[in-house]
Picture (spheres, rainbow over the protein chains, first blue to last red):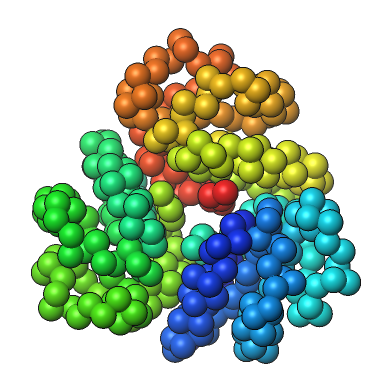
Amino acid sequence: MTLYHVIFHIDEEEKWPLLLGNVKNLLKENMAIEIEVLANAVAVSDYQLEPFIDQMRNLSQQGVQFVACQNALNAQHIVKNDLPAFVSVVPAGVAELVKKQSSGYAYIKP
Amino acid sequence: MTLYHVIFHIDEEEKWPLLLGNVKNLLKENMAIEIEVLANAVAVSDYQLEPFIDQMRNLSQQGVQFVACQNALNAQHIVKNDLPAFVSVVPAGVAELVKKQSSGYAYIKP
Amino acid sequence: MTLYHVIFHIDEEEKWPLLLGNVKNLLKENMAIEIEVLANAVAVSDYQLEPFIDQMRNLSQQGVQFVACQNALNAQHIVKNDLPAFVSVVPAGVAELVKKQSSGYAYIKP
């Protein structure tokens, strides 16, 4: 079975419900797939918002990687310790988007 | 001549005029290209809207593939028979976006 | 060191500050990278707007390519001579997005 890879990009807070729905739909498919969600700009602030955190934690337990951009966290005055443990941090979200696509990830911007 | 492939992604109704203009511009180029338009979320509802349908039908007659996400159709209470015959349906729009990029399609989100 | 390539796509005027911030963050990373910014639709009109031009000129001096879509310039009644010298023009922005991704560029839509 082909192993697929995808990185979802979000930089607008209002797109979180659509993005989380997209990820849920993707997990229901009979595909071998690695899913990363990369948030930068103001969208990182929702890593602190209930009820998003509950949905994200549930998805992370199904293998979805949630990632925040350090530049964005700095701009929003958020420190890593303020984030749920399942969220990892990269120095620059845009560099992550480039590197992952360069290694074969598809890109989706809901 | 290189054969190019592209999948356009739309999940917002208000982006249809821009997307259809993008596709028309692309068809005017001297390129061998396969073009797919993948609509999910609320954007699938415009597959029922005149005058978009006339423009889409014209583009489909030039080889453009118009595709709707079944999950989105369900959420909008639209059944396949309500759609123009030139629109095809896939189980999950996001899976289609991943698979097509994995097989070499470029991605454009107007 | 891997040489990365990325094309940023912008078709909305209000996304310029976010896009320019993305590009600045990317340049701060320790990566070998070629960066192109492709503007189409109404977003081309900001190639005439101070203070964006100053920021863009500074980035262009660091190697970032700024590109405008001729179809969009026509629609906005802008001629190439109205643009800063560092902006280049392609016949169709969407064709540029397809060709660059086909040659290995990552795609980012802020």
